[in-house]
Length: 486
Ligand code: NAD
Image 1: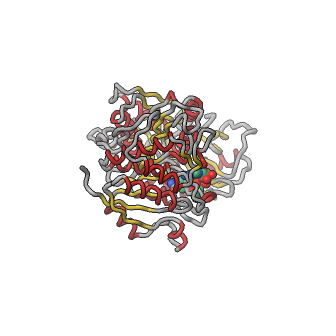
Image 2: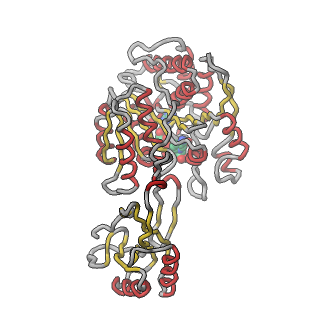
Image 3: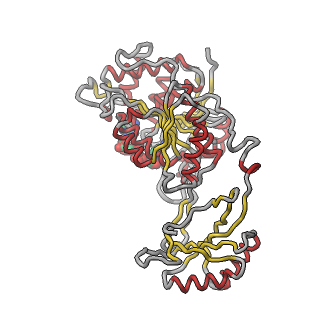
């Protein structure tokens, strides 16, 4: 017996209202113990000139109810508008994005009849901070931030998910052969945390070949965990090859609040035609019911939905030669409702699996007594000064930088787009108007004041500084990348 729960509902844009209407009808028909409190988000709010796409009063409702069922929304292009989806995930601390991608063979066509992959995407970090700058006439930058607590939390979540759901393997996808510090951290944390789960197999693959294998032989994968951007791309690929992006729901889990949504967007191309597949949002609502402990209702809806697929009642996106009825959104909804209480014959029926809320172990690497800030020594050793300079004679630039360095710092390297061009650059290296000039402390005793003084001297020498990045040693180990070709 579960208690009645008030949840926040956002009907969204495009096909959003149609598939939300379908989902709520099914939830009601299955006697879910839910009360709905609606909020307006997305296009209508953006059109009022509110760039966040959400009003303050809606935040209050979300915080009060703690559970949000959200239909997709349209993100306007340009105009300084921020993606509401990203804002919701980050503001509410919804760190884990869980996307179960399973084949429904032979009823929904797929080249991968045995696939059953859980994609777990880190949901707050990486390039999704949206910290971008145009720095020079030719160069634009997006900051990729990967943190120790953010990584530890998502990796622990992936292993706990595997443990709680009887999964046997967790695969991590990173690009740490190139991004040795950021993706290297993700990989290192994965290796460390995996040791606490000896009964679960673990592997790390480079994201490019890992994604290729996932698209080719998804049945060899079980739970897959990765940073935000890779997860965004990989989860759409995985959903599509399982049958359709219109079939996969997504749980966004935080420590206090959770949001459930379809993985697909607002599909403006088919909005208002009563042909959208409501399955992804139905799947999201089933995950939500499990999150709320309403397992009987969750299983009832899931089994009726599987039976509907088995009976060949298919929306146009999954309609195939063996389908029996090309169903509208409303036909499909009615068919699921009529099958409540029934079980599928071929597709494996469900019983209380797929839990998404369980106790995540406390963060040990980043927040315990042994946290790095308590045990490691951090030493300032130099500074990378990024400058705007139209490509000319590089030796003249080096001379000017050296003159400004004085006896405190030594100019050790100039790179362009990460490739060393001084000393001993290759004339074939293409250069833009954006240069990184690396200064190392002569006596190993750099200070913030000395770095600021260096900047003053550089400015006096007519050097146009865009930004600086301090160079640190952690326990005497360099914590900055070297130049390509250095
Ligand atoms: P989309 O997922 O909306 O559509 C991609 C294709 O899949 C389209 O051909 C569409 O018709 C089809 N499709 C999607 N869902 C379907 C369904 N349930 N049934 C049948 N067919 C379906 O992606 P898009 O066109 O790139 O984006 C449209 C808008 O949605 C954009 O403004 C984007 O920013 C937004 N978006 C929102 C979310 C979200 O709210 N979580 C996620 C992704 C994209």
